[in-house]
Image (cartoon, rainbow, N blue to C red):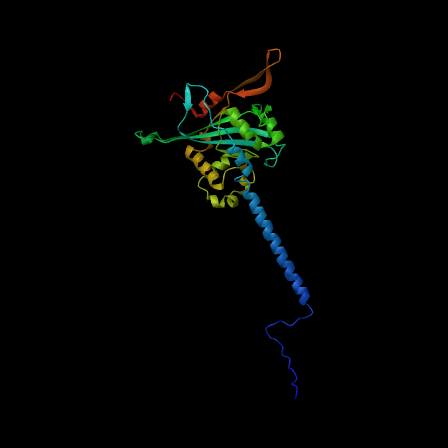
Length: 277
C-alpha cells in the first residue's frame, strides 16, 4: 500500500501571526478597556446629576408630613388648589449632610382658584405669597427634642427640617428645594423648557439644588411662576412670630430664646385658611 504525502495549505481567511501580533492585541484590549471606563464614568456622572432631582431622601420627608389642621373654629381650610414649596438655602455644596449652615428658609405658596359651577369664568385666578422663616424659629425633631431651625439643620441636615417645619408652621409642603443660593428666579426662567433636556440645558442650576421634584415638576413650577408674572409678583412677608416661652419648676415663665410661629395667622396670610365656611 502506498501512502500519500499530506499536503499543507495556507488559509487565506486567517491572518498569519507576525512579530507584532501580541503587541497589536494588547493595544486593542487597552483601547477597549479605556473606552469602557470612559463610558461607565459618563453614565455614573449623568446618574449623579439626575439624582439631584427626584431625591429619595427629600421625597420620604415630604411623604411623612402631617395634614393641615384647624384649631380656630372661625376659619376653615380653603378649597382652592395650592402648590406649597419649602425653599431652604444652605452653605456648602448643597448636599443633605449634617453640618449644613442654614442661610435662609422660605415657604412659597401658589394659590389657584378654579371657578365653581355657576361661577363666572373670569373668577379664575393665580396668586402667590412667600413667607420668610427665621433660623431662630423653634422646631421639634422626631426624637422630641426642641431646637432652632438653624440648629436642627446644622446637626441633622436640611432634610431633617421638613417634618418639624411642617408641624411648626401647619403647612404641608408639596415639594422641597435645598439650594446653595437663591434659585427662585432661575426656576421661574425654566418656563417653557423641555423637561427631557433639563439636565443638559440647565446643568448649572441642577448642580446647585437638591429636590424631590422631577424635571417635569420643576418646569411646571417655573410655568406657574411665569403665569403669576414672575418672581416680582410674589407677595413676600416675614412669618408672624412671638417669643417662645416655657414654664420653670417654680411655676414662673421664661423665654427660651426661640421664636414661635403664629400658625393661624401665618396660614391666613398664605391664603390656606379662610374665614367661615
